Length: 270
Image (cartoon, rainbow, N blue to C red; front, side, top):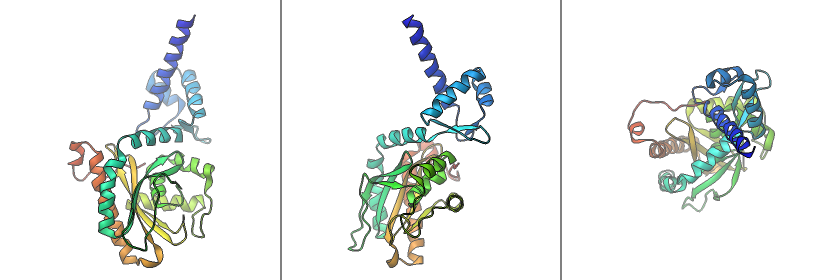
């Protein structure tokens, strides 16, 4: 009967949503058995749901451990939501502040699948400046903003990006070795900033810092961009400090008043 078919389909959707909602920043991986016990749903049903969600890339499963985690499809939906939440209006004034403090161009980007998407940009008034266009997609492995998304996200994002579009060499300094890139991402996690040393465009450098939401997840990335040959190490350190400071200000705008006023809470990372 049509009514019973509709009810069955609705129940399946509800169960699939429960599977996705089981994942948190503290519990980012489950076995199928653990999900079954957590949700009180028979293991065979959970296995079928996981298989369907993997097909849409909402979930990912480690081929060795068989443990399940959030997939890149969920990141894509999250980036669409974040973009809708007035990121551009909130971020743009702070980009202007960053340009004033550093003298360099600034941009904000969000995650879009396995690429980053430039959503706001303010150019430096200097004749010698880096130009960034709103709407441009950038490779995650070859940009400062992209490395932030990789460092602050589930490991499945790096795995997906390594497959499509791949770790292609854009310049002579692009990191294309997965092990080397993982080591660099570990450093990003430790320092809270990511660097681009001419890896996307020869002669163009950048440093980026994360905009973090309530639960410590990355909402966007802010970066300052500069011509490599005209900025010395001391200036780069200053630009990095200013970028991190402005990104922290923006993060406070994305957090609830209670969390924004709390001091001493470190950013939650993967």
